[in-house]
Image 1 (cartoon, one colour):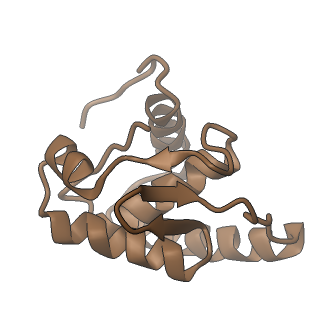
Image 2: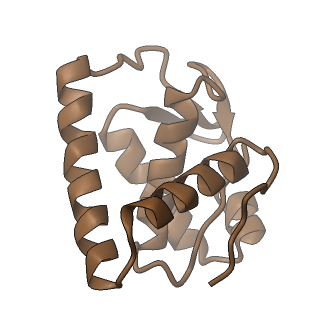
Length: 135
C-alpha cells in the first residue's frame, strides 16, 4: 500500500491517510481482506507520529472500512459495502466545493486544479509524473 502525504497541504495528516485508503479501496487497489501496514511501519514510512496513523486506523474502523485483530493487524473488512452512487456523488461534490473555494482564494484557475488532480492521481496510482508543473 503506497500512501503519499503532503505535510503542508492544510489537510490533517490522519485525514490524508483516511482519504487515500478510501481511494485505494474505491480504485480496487485494496480489496476486502487485505492487510494494512502495521501502525509503526506506516508511521516510519511517512515520517509521522504513530499516533497519527493510529487515529486514521481508528476512524477507518469506526467507519466500518477496516477491522483490527489484536496482535494480528488491521484488515479491510469483508463487508466493505460501496455507498449508493447518489451518496458518493454528494460526498464528492462537498469535497469539490471545498477545493474550488480554497483554490479560488489562492488564485488558481480550474485548468490548474485539473492539472494538479491528474498529477496526484498518477502519483497515487504509482504512475508517471508527466505534466508535472512547479509553481
